[in-house]
Every structure is written in C-alpha cells, then in structure tokens.
Length: 120
Image 1 (cartoon, rainbow, N blue to C red):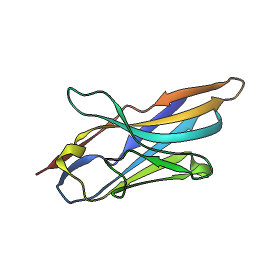
Image 2: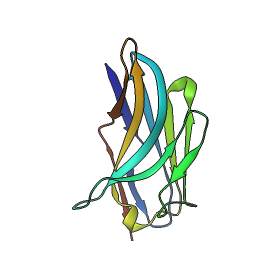
Image 3: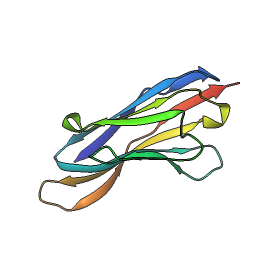
Image 4: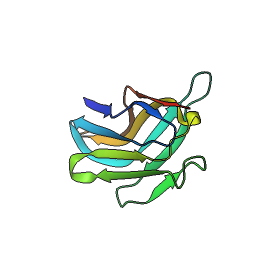
C-alpha cells in the first residue's frame, strides 16, 4: 500500500502565505515526479506545479512567481510554498506522485486533499 498525506491547508487573508506538505509512505521502491493539483468548486482539477526527482519544476501560469514547489527525495516529501495568495487560489489542493511499489510498475497516487481558503 502507498499513502499520500497532505497537511498545511487553512484559512488565510489575501496577500498571506501558506506552506503545504505531502508525505508519501508505504512500500515505495521509487518515486518519480511529484506535484500539486487543485480543484475549486464547480471547476475541473487543474495542475498547480510539478517537480521531478532532479528538481526540474513546472508551474501553472496563474501561480508562477508566487508559488514554489520543492521536495525531499530521501523523505518522499513534496512541499508547496504559497505566497501572495489571492481569493482565486481558494480550492482543495491535492498531492500527486508517480510511484513504483516493490515488485510492480509505476502508478499514479493521490492524497485526500487539503482545503485552502483565501479571504478578500
């Protein structure tokens, strides 16, 4: 079994900051790309940011320059530092990881989501 557990969401005023964390645990042989997605009410889930094991990053245009993704490969943990938050950043944020379990191939895993609410 593999579990992704997010933490760090909450309520913040516009212009504030939050830091999300996501820890992958279980029978993990290797973790490849990890990332964050978000889903606002009535909208589709969208990519926020991804990061490879070598540290290459990719950001949605809407968050570039405000959010920073990072990871600790030894701890199978990915972080999302969110600065200058806007009300439109309000959503449930989901962690995603491409993980290979011992004796199996690569699969996508998702966390349960953490709510981020930005008040104006």
